[in-house]
Length: 576
Length: 46
Image (cartoon, rainbow over all chains, first blue to last red; front, side, top):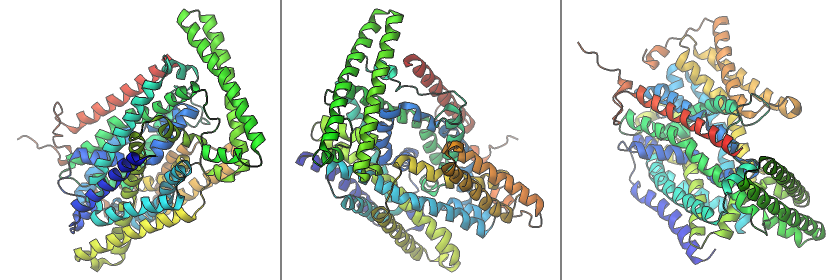
C-alpha cells in the first residue's frame, strides 16, 4: 500500500463515519433513534437492508468459495425472494400497525411477557455470539495479508462503529449504510472490470469446463449441501427468520414515512439479491480462470503463512510441494489450451478427450493444493482459523490492482464490516433497552430522554462485548459457514414463535413457550447427533424447516393437552 | 357504495401497479425468470 491507498482508505471510511456522526448528532427523540428518520425513503431502506445482510465475509469469502467449489452457493439465496414477499404481506403491516420498536414486542402483545423475553433472549444470544464472529472474520484475514496487528483492526472497526451508532442510532446507521454501499459497489465493479480486462479469451467456457459454473442442481440428494430444493426450502425458512424476526433487519424496515417505503425497500432486495450474489460468485469463478493462466499462481493463497514455512525448518518439504504444483499447473495450462483449440474445430470426440485430460490434470493440481494446505495447517495450526480460499480475492486485489484502487477495495472490506456491525449493535442495543430494561422497569417508559440514554449505553456495551469476544475467543471453524450454522441452530425456534403468532390464533403463550424450548432442544440434538455420528449428519439448512415445524407441532400438541390457558390477546394484536 | 381497499393493500405508488398483489407477482415472476436463466446458464456451460 502506498500513500494514495492510505488516503483513499482512511478518507472513505472516516469520512462516511464522520458525516454520519455530524448529521445525526442531535438525535434525541426515541422514535428517530430506534427507527430512523420518519422521512427515510424506500431506496435508503432497501440499501440499508442489503448493507446489513452483506458483511465483509460476503465480499471476501464468497469469491473464494466460488473459486474453490464453483457458483452452486448461489442456490442458498433462492428462498429469499419468496420469504421477503411473505414478510411484506404479513409481518411488516402488523409491526407497523402496532407501532412496535422490536419484533419481540409483538410477541408480548400476542402472547405474554415470558414468550417475549424468550424471543428477545434467543435473538440476543445468537446475535451476540455472531457479533464476535462478524468482527473477527474480516480482521483475521486482513491482518494476515496486510501484516497489521489483529487486535488493532478489531478495535479499530469496533470503535468506529460504536462512535457513530451510539451517536445517531438508527438514523446514523441508515445514513452511513447508503454511502457505504455506494463505496462497496464502486469498488467491486472496478475490480470486476479489471479482472475482465485481464482474462483470456473463452474464460467463461473454461470456467464451465472446469466445473465452476454449475449454478443450479435439481437433484433430490439430501446429503448435498447446495441444491435447488435445499436452497428454496431451507433458504426460505432461513430468510424468513432473518428478515421477519431478526431485529437487525426488522429495525431497518419498520421506520420510514409509510408502510410503502418498507415494502418497496424489501422488494428492491427481493429482485436484486440473487443477481448481486451471482455477480460476486462469478467474480470468484473468473478469478479461478485468471489464476490458471498465471505461471506463478500460488499453491496456497495464505502466502504470509506459507512464506514463513519456506524460511523455517521444513523449507525443503514446502519447496518440493511448490515445485510439484508449478509443474502440474503448467501441465494443466497446456491441457486448457489444447481443449480450447479443439473446441473451435468442433470434433466432438476430440473435445471430450481433451476435456477428460483437462479434468484429470485439474484433479492432480487440486490434490497437490490439498496436500499443501494440510502440510501448512500441521506446521502452523493458526492457519486453520481461516480457509485458504478466503485469501484468493484479497490476493488479487493486492497484487493485480493499481494503487488507489487497492485503497478503494480495502475501503470496501472495512465499509462492509462497519455497515453490518453498526446494524447489529443498533439492534442489540434496541432489544436490550425495549425488551429487557424497559420491560423490567415499566415506569421508565415515560421518560424519553432516559430511554435514549439507556439505548446509547446498551449499544456501547454490546460494542465493547463484540470487541472483547473477537479479541479473546479462539475461533476454529471456517467463518462464513460458522455464521450460517449458528443462525440455523437458533433461527428456527424464533421463526416458529412468529409463525404460531401470525397463523395459529388458538395457541396461547404457555403452549408456544414450552413448544419453543422443546423445539430448540430437538434442533440442538439433531446438530449434536450429526457431529457425533457424521454418517447421519444433515445439511444445516434443513435445520430451519425442521425446527420451525417442531415449534408449530409442539404448540398445537401442548395447546390440545393443556387447553386451560386459551389465547385471548391475539385477536387484538392481529387486528382480527 | 364503493368499498375502500384494506389499509395494508394501499396503492403501492409504482407505475403500472394498482395493488401490492401485482408487485408481489412481478417479484415472483422475476425470481422464476432468474432461476430459469441460471438453469440455462448451467446447462450451457456444463
